[in-house]
Length: 251
Image (cartoon, rainbow, N blue to C red; front, side, top):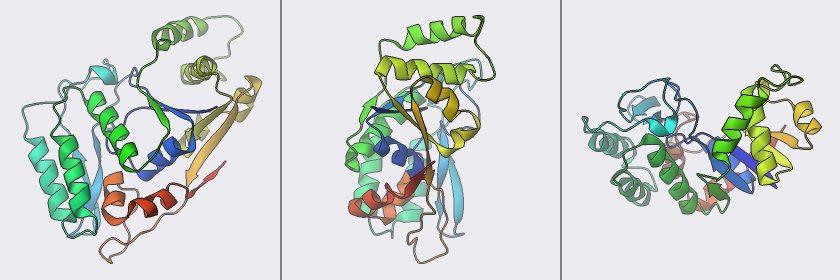
């Protein structure tokens, strides 16, 4: 069984969905420390007028590195929904799939959700449904708490090398064991953290997804890469996106 684990990001880029599409089960894990300026509450859209990437952000209450991702609430003091939808409308109103995608985004944005993690998880699942990605997506498992307790104890056990087995690696290995997964997939950015040899010692094959250089037409202007999945959906049909989901290599 192929397993992947990732934090629930806000309308992430297509490589995130390539990873979901490539595995049998995908765990959206939010019991981790919140990191400011990560991709939990921000991402990038196309600025049509200037033909460049433009950040959008969902405002949060009490952002703190002392809190877990699932403890961070969305601020209700800003009219962020209207501003976000206005940004989408102004930059994409002439995109070929605007009508369908804008309505889809509007329904997601209008849902009443208090926590950013819940908003992101629901959005990711709905986007997967929209794109016909049939991977099993899990947001909670009964073993989560016990794994977190176990790895804290394992850190202090004799014979556990903290360099080869940092807490992030221990967590993934324990998740794989609980899921009976013999393959673990990660984005290419995890190469600096995860070692194929370490996973092999634990009878798990480790693979990294490296997204190909993806190009598609954005109003006929020079292509602006690595934007939110929203940009991909605005300019590509579902069939075209299915093709793009397979545009990667395994390392």
